[in-house]
Image (cartoon, rainbow, N blue to C red):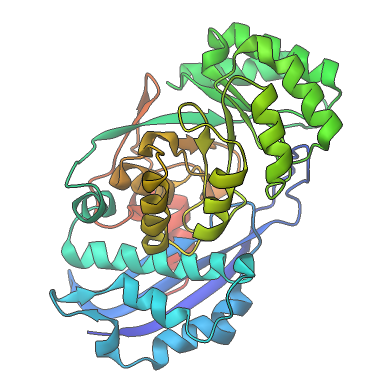
Length: 387
């Protein structure tokens, strides 16, 4: 049993969307295919993944270091001796050879993308959905048939005012979502509060609305927004500070009583440990949002999760960044709080399998082996193109 080839390609998102920090006009993502010599249904088993959204394609690191390490390794060194399958923890260790500590984002996205693709192959070899395999290994076999799912949106766009935002909210409610997240910080405080008030009214209360500042605020603006948002008792106030400004985050936590959320721009177990140690976050209400494929992948996330549980954090406080089929499988497998969705936003990379259903804020899971990209027609066509 061995990996016979690994292929990758950079794909542009071609999006005109904008949040308070940047636009997506140049954004790309890496798509990978890990090809094995294991045959199922007369074809080699292939594991697929992409590097979520919000970080650029990372093919150079894959081509220069990570893929050669995997292909040059002795095939038996990547196998699980207790089963007839690959051992993802050994693949992670292989990719991390000769890597200097620190500087995580230079490699964490590339490593995690390849690692998640390998998990897709491992689950396909076992002939089970990835969320089932993960539940067996990391969640005491607790299987989920559906998980909570909120929808992201409320982007800034030319000509988009309150009527257009309200139309967007109504559309998402009609689609079965009950909680929505909108952007703040890309307009004046007064304009954003008007947007929040309109959204709270349509969503049926602040508990069904989150806002996201995309880490764009300085101290003065973060405090001003926190003061203005407090009366609405929102589901959460996301990334009000720079991702590594733990001191300002801790100051806000003393000032802002409702829930805050952060973590999508931290990419290592060490950084997350620093966040919950020094960032003033409250485990009884605040939300953590690490993007698993961008943070070295599933094996490393299991270690991050163990660290968090030791520090008193619950799994249902974790809502990973990444509204896609990968995140859905990981949320279900680890028994996390929920996943996000971004329909109609990032082209083929947004959303879930074509037959996925959202009802009363819950999304159904695929029973396809692996991650289930095969049920996501447009994206699977891109992935199959690598072969």
